[in-house]
Image (cartoon, rainbow over all chains, first blue to last red; front, side):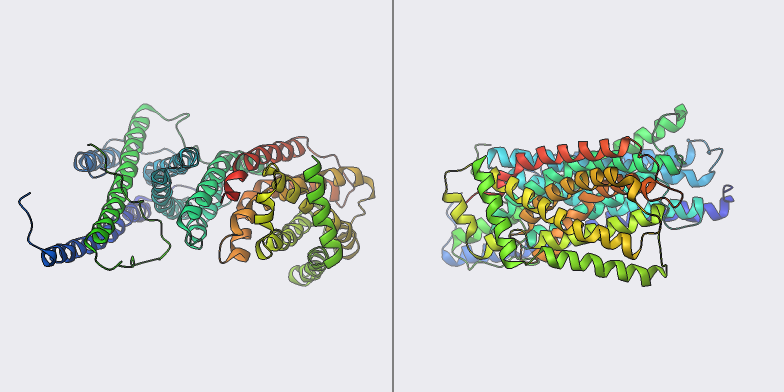
Length: 58
Length: 248
Length: 223
């Protein structure tokens, strides 16, 4: 097949690179939700530790 | 400690990938036959190479797990395969886009590397279902390692077999990796490959750090006597084994 | 050696008595040929189409077999009994693979003639020795990979689904080589010779996977 003209080809190339970016961003989003869950749990554990007694001087 | 060095690593990844894409669009010459479409090659092929190496790395880590019995190796293997699968999706999608632009169809059987990759992807797609359906964590880790080793050995064999099959009927249409690449294209390709490799390591470290942190949390919760919080998501998902206190 | 022989004899005897797997696999093959007739809307096939129909059918029939391969051990505690015995654990792998191989041969004794009668256009009489050789080589590959996949899947909850999903991609090179090798034998214009690369590929692939399975199988039986 002859090479596509630049304006048509551009859309495909852009699609490919956008796919790549989207993949990374989706991964970042998933990691972000994991991070917020860890943050929440840490806060809970902190409260739990406070309940059990005052923190000794570290 | 997986988070250590993550910042410089992700910075390096960012810089390398940005440099790579800049090279792709401002430096690499236009391909004589395929025109602008050929630019997809700089994102599609490095992703594929890194994903396949990631699968093989997962196999090597699995061997480490079976030899030492240390479940951390299994965790590393799991994450490596997981990241490779994500990249694999990217490979198949960008490959389909390339096929559509080059031949007018979203899929072609003519390109043996793409076909081989599909087969490998289908195989590794069973990795997580296999893992998550085995409840006992120690057994799950062992079986997953056996799978990772088998599948890792299969990757090169599969590529050979498909190449053997297709070479008779259809001549290789796309010269994908660097045999006859002119210098400026080769540089661009190599920088992109380096960027993808760095991306893989960054994502791997990122996920390992996250799993490690979750494991620390569980241990902490246990020590504080809080009730066991069931992990959200799949109940049998591999969790990092309780960390051994190391003198760091 | 004698352990393996004893295990194989047990499995074969069990199959003869219960007739669970082989008749179903054979019947499945014949029925699939009928389905192909209607699906392809053809009364006879030749060449690469014939080769493809035959191998795909045999492959899927094999999937039925591998689902049942370790079921008896799993459900009746055969694993524990085996582990207590002072024998080399890979004997279980070898014996199961040999048993599966025997089942596949038995199925083909029914399926291949059925194929010739129902769907095959040209007569294969000139090419029987080569066909036999390819069948045996491919059966060896299916047996080894099928046993490995079955063992991997036996502990999972959805083992009937997982085992074929594991086995099929691993078996694609076997299908490639077997189908390419069989095509010249089933040509309308008369059987031609088989390119040497395909039996060689089959043999090498079988060997590699046999070694791999031998190396990893122990880890599947621990505890």
